[in-house]
Length: 173
Image (cartoon, rainbow, N blue to C red; front, side):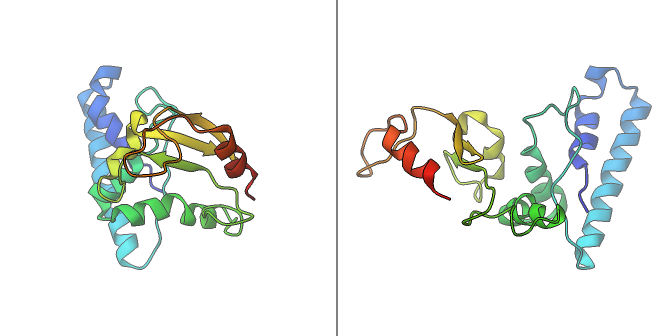
């Protein structure tokens, strides 16, 4: 099961801004509450919950997917690690590619984030684009900033990813 809680929540939070009537917003609120309750029942019965929602709309734009992790924690009672595993390992299983997706292992397709902070302490940190210092997609750096670098000690100054580091990381299978 992959609930689209984000779409319903955004519709409640921002519906007026996009011209939805109060009646329609109230319907989204009911759907959100019933959907969250259904998810909790599925989990209680031993079912699994993959991360997934409806994105690409005005109030759920692409690039805001990490908010679903917060919804799983706040509305479904997941721990941050359970939410992350639903988005990664379980995602590979749901897509019927458990031996290719969802884990950081040799031979797997893995995208990685270097985050300034601990998402297990605060899952919302993954929504803060300024805290995402590096993004690797398909084994290549997609985004990097000058706030990351190999460090020789705790007080070493930060700098850009060096060409040597990039070559080593990108060469790994």
